[in-house]
Amino acid sequence: MSSHAELLRNVSLFANVDEAELQRISALLAERSFSKDAPIVSKDEPGDAMFVIARGRVKVCIQGEGGREVILNILKAGDFFGEMSLLDDLPRSASVVAAEDSTVLILKRDQFVEHVNNSPATGLNIMGELSRRLRRADDLISNLALLDVYSRVAHIMIDLAKRDGQEVEEGILIKERPTQQDIASMIGTSRETVSRVLSEFQKRGFVEMRGREILLSRKFTTDAAANAGP
Image (cartoon, rainbow, N blue to C red; front, side, top):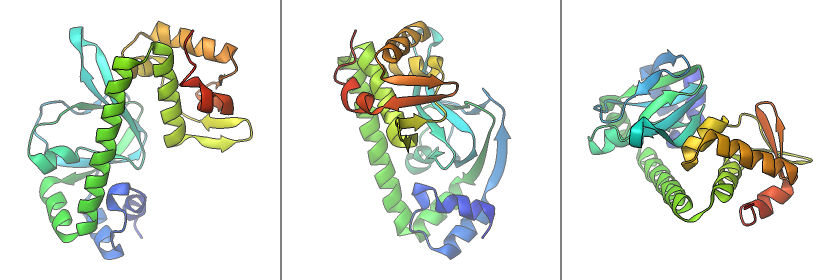
């Protein structure tokens, strides 16, 4: 099996796709690398391809008032983006920027449409993924509107734990946490505020900073979102 086909097998979009179709799609993929902070796609540009992340992490973002960056999501290797414009034939709804040196696999529109026509399983996978992203957007909007900043930071940490956390004896370890500025951009506050909140969480024994890693205590994952305030 080619390395691209092996990667696709672990991408939710291509779950339950047969081996021959995976090999065919992998042969069509174009690989491209981006350095940290380089734009991959821009909001409002025509969408003529979808992308699978082979290495690194990317930020899905929009520009808020005064040019402030608002991060909608951070995606890692095995995640994908750009499929919405291929489905509705509308411009990109957000920009995507490399959060670190990254490599993506590119599938053009005509290739994507042909694959979906040949693979009903992928069509169902797309609907499932769009539903998950809509629920995430609903949660984000609710959190911004209803929660104080302590609870918003707590919810971001718990979401990261669910998606990327590793169970260890002391709790849940997140090996590559977002920067404080990225967290601030995800919850609509300042980096200084996020730093203050995380320091308070450390004092309470909710979290332990370990360089790029962060350990969430089991107490944090059960109690912090409800009792995170000062």
